[in-house]
Image (cartoon, rainbow, N blue to C red; front, side, top):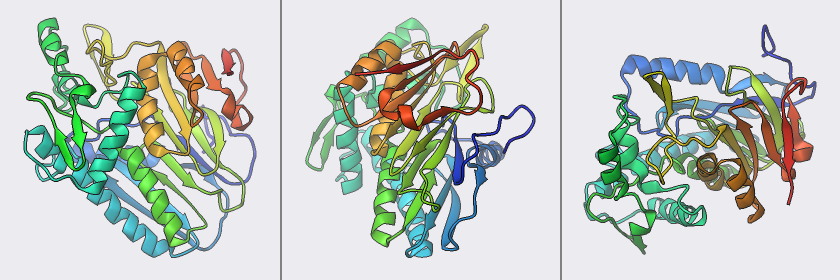
Length: 369
């Protein structure tokens, strides 16, 4: 809520949520104490700034899954039953798509085992591979061995030597992954990670579940992936705050209805060595953390899977390639925050975007078709 150093949002009824770039690599194992701190911080920072009174038929739940704190809220319909089903769905998907759970389908695939894919795993793989191709490899689900070499999956951070990276990069190529029906084939040494799409896919499935349950409106915050069903209970669009990558305040607000809003930024997970900061979003073309001049990327789209994937891919692309890519599609918009503090948005959200305070000296640009 507004306070010292935190500007008030423009006055408006309805609910305001603060969206932080989340930990894309949700497979990271943490100690129980560290996990507790992460949970507390996520709950404290990632949920609501303010909320107007709403319908009495409000049902909420929180849980820890995919290594992040999640909040689910539904209004109207069979909300309570829907939330129970939603939590079961999240845990089921985590059990399928985790890279570290030895009982998951993805873990078995990465060990070279033959797996009869479930419909959910097959569906998310199909969507992920299609987006790898469409982004020209800016998104590449076979980057997992490289991410692991940097220590982002274990917490044992290091800068790999060039020879080691070169050897690992030979295994990075989504085109090597062959998916035919329920059968996935991985060449020896190739491993995949769906952390760049799994939460988005989960959000899409949750929205479908809430619709079928008859919810009038709903929102979920999956640790930085916000997705909403319909309008807020007061009939206005949902208002989502976009975090300032340089602090704990928010830089802007976007109003949405029936949309996913997903932010990625290297400021959430990084390490420093010899005075250099290394972020966790790896450029598949170099094997090094992406250095595109961007501090964060927020994608707004009706598809959570698309928003999740493109928040990573456009971060790798950088502002010029991101704008060019956007002009070739009509199913998403973006908010790019540069390392220099500049903000660039696509024209599709021009009318729903606002600064949280005064624009001041912030460089601002609207990209048009």
